[in-house]
Length: 300
Ligand SMILES: [Fe+2]
Image 1 (cartoon, rainbow, N blue to C red):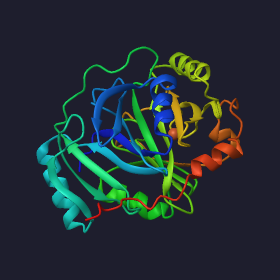
Image 2 (cartoon, protein in one colour; image 1 turned 180 degrees about the horizontal axis):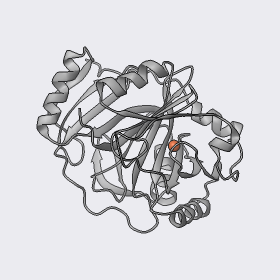
Image 3 (cartoon, rainbow, N blue to C red; image 1 turned 135 degrees about the horizontal axis):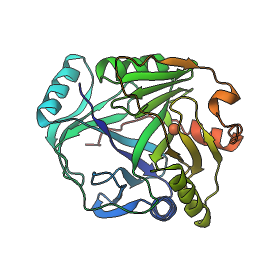
């Protein structure tokens, strides 16, 4: 399976209006204007109709995570392969109703999360400009079974393991970027954070400034991570989701030459510059999130 990139994340928002204001004003995303089921669809600079979908709901929940495939043929082949692997599917390949449509299908990962694979999605009109996120970089998910979940994404979906952070976190890639998805060992499945790529360290600080003047507080950073080497800043948006700005991370130039390493969880390895210090208790609680039971079938 040849997954090309992370397309979007759809989240349930208890504070829908405040969260929409945060992502469009403080975070610099552009509201695409599309409306479907009362959701908001927000764009980065990437050639995608949206990279974040916000749904009104009483509790936080990952509604869906979508990845791209190169072609309709790959979508059909992936659906067949997952069926043979015994993976529960939610829907067979069909024309999608989300902005940009495309051809795709949904299935459940080992933590009962709805994952979508699609191709032929129409690009949106031009996204935002200025020191705003170039793209959605990655999502980190809490999982009660880090070995099983990591193995599923590697063996069934074709991700490659870039690095481990002890036996606490696994970082997986589907293109030269160090990770498009990562897993964190936790008592329950939940959203941990999403991360958004800025074009440079200068732009990262400009975005930090915009978030500050919009009333948001920097919760952890600025620092530079060990695994992936990104410069980072963390915030918590109004519904309680942790969001990260990154810049200047590494790319993996040679698939075959890369050897995953196991990073020690020392203060020096988690904050290479020593500028961020340890994450606060508050942001650790926010990253632990609320237990997410995953996909709920539509009631008949
Ligand atoms: Fe991250």
